Image (cartoon, rainbow, N blue to C red; front, side, top):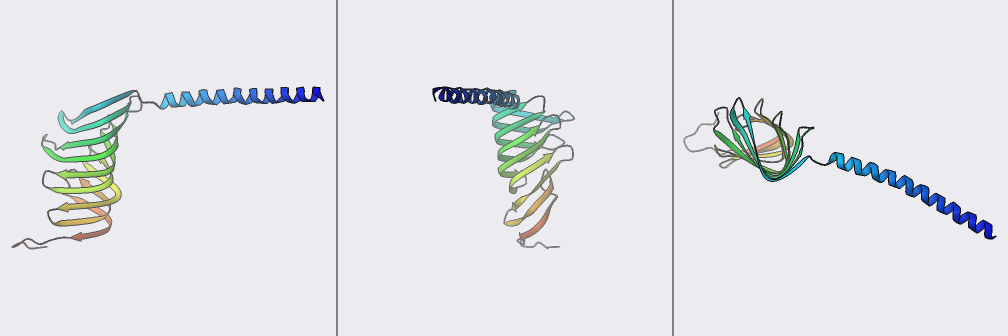
Length: 186
């Protein structure tokens, strides 16, 4: 009986040793994966400036930036973005909870409480936006609300220029347009 108990104890010790050995290998794999996914740089209270043809096109200010250099990928938290036209004149201001930036392409995608105000007084509210500076287009598939003065338009999906002057709301469009005195509606 004693030999049987000793054999069972030895068997349990061997099984536990194998499990521990395999678990250590998994931990090493997890550590390597975590280290591989860590950003190359973490910057607090940062400012990024993009230019197109030597002229300032975008200024991004963020509370925190997490940058992966080899991937040309930057995650930013608590964003404020100023956009400029081809002459370098300010056109609009954007705020969002977070976003992703691809510096080489100068593309930007923002998420969470996205609010844009143009210098002309047009306001855009949504939950996500993508901006491509090469074609000066803003797009989203999310719910949007655009306001200018008392005029309000809502719907899902948006394609617009960065000034929000020329835009298309893609579906479920609703609007409330107020006629000003002495103004004709076409």
